[in-house]
Amino acid sequence: MYLELFKLTELPFRLTPDPAFLYLSKHHARAKAYMESTIWFTDGFVVITGEIGSGKTTLIETFLKELERDVVVAQINQTQVSAIEFLQTLLVQFGFQPFRMKKAELLATLNEFLIEQYSNGRRVLLIVDEAQNLSNKVLEEIRLLSGVETTKEKVLRIILAGQPELNDKLNSSSLIQLAQRIRLRFHLTALSKSDTAAYIQHRLEVAGSQGRQIFEPDTFSMVYRYTGGIPRLVNTLCDTAMMAAYAQDRDVVTVDDVRAAVEELQWVEYAERSVKLTGFSGGHFAPRGSNGAHTSTDDDEAPAERRIVLGRVLVGVNGQTIAERELSPGRFIIGRTPDNDLQIDSKFISRHHAQIITSLHTSVLEDLNSTNGVYVRGKRVRRRMLNDGDVVQIGQHEIMYFDERMARTRASMNEGEDDAVPMLQESMPERHIATIADDEELEPVEKIRQSP
Image (cartoon, rainbow, N blue to C red; front, side, top):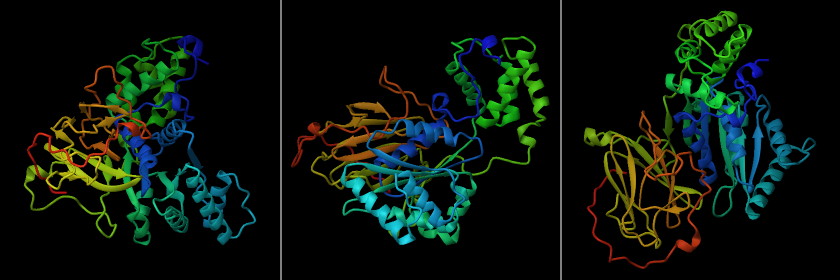
């Protein structure tokens, strides 16, 4: 092969999912943050969709690799099964031999297992890949399993991943009850032109390029033109182009090599293909009304400038979501009293605890001299630019931040701090929480009301 010629240690464009080669574009990082939210918040499903070859499986493998040891995982990839076969497959993942069990026994065994894991301090996660192939009966069984709960919380976390058809299925009238359980949806789009170039360079670097220019700069736009930014297609074209360069004994891939690869693969430009990218342009938050149905949070009577949604926060405590709020330009104040934009009635929260200042480009979190402080990634912060997926802990509550801007910059105000998507298991140490009856010593803060 061409490894010796290009001085690489391993093949950079293999089609096999490998977490070591994962390139976190803005959209991939967002999808990963949504997956991680299932560990933090137990209520509701998370649904991740994407075109064939968009990187869903690699993203799942990376997510699983980073899970802590107290998470028990069942990963199901074979989805063309009956309801009984699905339940049996699930139990096999948990170490049972269920093939002679009847349905009632299957369900009883699963319920007992889930409650037992919860009692032992373990979290149970079900990930179903290729979920678009699930029948409605199987999806209904999954919905029923999601209802297993203790007196405090639900005990099964669920991620459904699949192709765009999964959204059509979940939105059908026959699955209304399941759709009402969906807390977060995200569609994994193709890479942008600039991300495609960065993706290629990232994989070459992981494979041992050590900064050497293996693909000429002019090749990137051509690769994008013929692949549409679909990672699997990028891998196929780049690998074939490297073989073409190898045949010419060149250690740099040129436009001619990419053109030769296109001819060998008999491809036309991606825009001319019959299969077009469809689906969402980004993440979709699914706020619920009092009946559990998804509702719009826009207020038709609100001024136009108030409808600009630049971010959202998801508030939870003890694994349960208690509030969802939109962030528009301006100040969003969090505290214990009713005059805040987000009221959290807890003795661990100061009267005016923190604020998020949102502009067209950034959202900045500020501690308002609170007694118990504000924590991100287990560290107390006074002022910090929020990154998509950040989890903020104040008192016993967690606030997860999602950035809704189309052009997202993941820079951090804290020098030397990485901007990777944080793991959601990080939380504020118990010893930092101080009970306060009142905190009248706090300076008064201007109160800006926003429609919830």
